[in-house]
Length: 443
Ligand SMILES: Cc1ncc(COP(=O)(O)O)c(C=O)c1O
Image 1 (cartoon, rainbow, N blue to C red):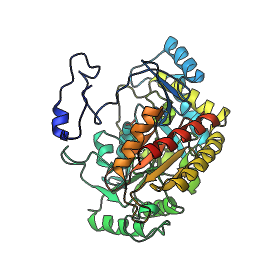
Image 2 (cartoon, helix red, strand yellow; image 1 turned 135 degrees about the horizontal axis):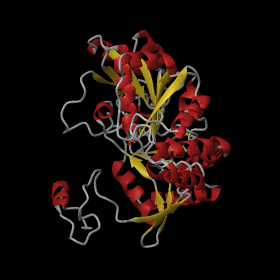
Image 3 (spheres, rainbow, N blue to C red; image 1 turned 180 degrees about the horizontal axis):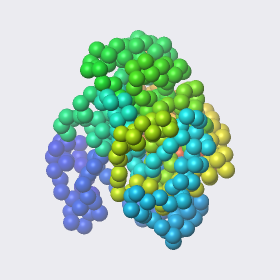
Image 4 (cartoon, rainbow, N blue to C red; image 1 turned 90 degrees about the vertical axis):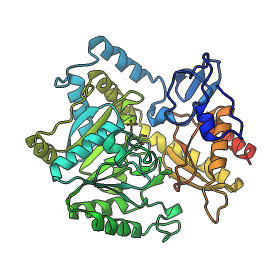
């Protein structure tokens, strides 16, 4: 891999072609440069590289491996399903698909009653938005200015945190709502609390722009790419009320938050709201591509009558559904939600202790095992320190800890810490120790 010196410009660096024997020689860089490591195997909270380095994985892969890597229940489900049936004609069903739907509905509140199973989070949101458009007859979709809902066309049109420039027009009718981040109030109104004035302002702007064709509002209950921002108390219930007034559906995207990470099985349960549509993805497959779009009987019946179409090659595939069943039953049987609260409290306590000693740690926030550490140039201005954030994550990796930084423009420079729910207390303590050292080394 080429060594990049600081006087090389970004476009010069990007133009460097790796040597023929470089492992990345024939790969497209889809999110910047690749780190200089190749993972050979993974177990529990640990990755091992092909040259024998061990790395503590506090990103749970891409936030999917909530049971940890190589969980025996997932391995058994894969073995069993691969010996029976992996993939089918998209109109056919298998027992694992019908049972996964039944098992999920037993955990979700009424009137949520119907699911379809796809592969990725983007696809599940795409299906949710198509359902909403067909059901309402509208096409306007609201999403937070700090959102991430996926890379497919509809989902990326409602993704404002990154990736908007350079790809042509977004879907007509997509509009942004201010992200209700009390640490960085989007309308410079509150500090450290949210009185929902940003929701008033956002709704007034969208009403002004609307051509009278509302369809849906799609939100993450804890914005992740937007800087680990849990929705403030009362926000989601009020948003649901505003959606109902406008006859638009509320879609809650639980890609990262479902199935225990925040204590409850679904994050929306902490807000006393039942959305019209819920999407599940990352955590449902535990590392395999599995997602779900869930809605009510009434919306399903209406859209079926209108010939709803959302067929993909892997809709209702049996193998990922079998794995999804194993994930759901393991989360419930092993009480991983309660574990996330206990391990999250230990993590949080340690991070708050680091905050007392490290001036750039401006804020520690999150719920359960989904925690953000907001790094700032100074605690008064709260200016995001992107350079420090990058240096700290790089140093953590050198020291054997994989943490992620979310630092999209205007949204902060936030370490996203989300270990598997099976993480041990010793692993939490080790992660904190490494982070402490990296915070020091990079000052
Ligand atoms: C909240 C949220 N929704 C949707 C997605 C998209 O999921 P996928 O990458 O599986 O399409 C992501 C991915 O990071 C996400 O964080």
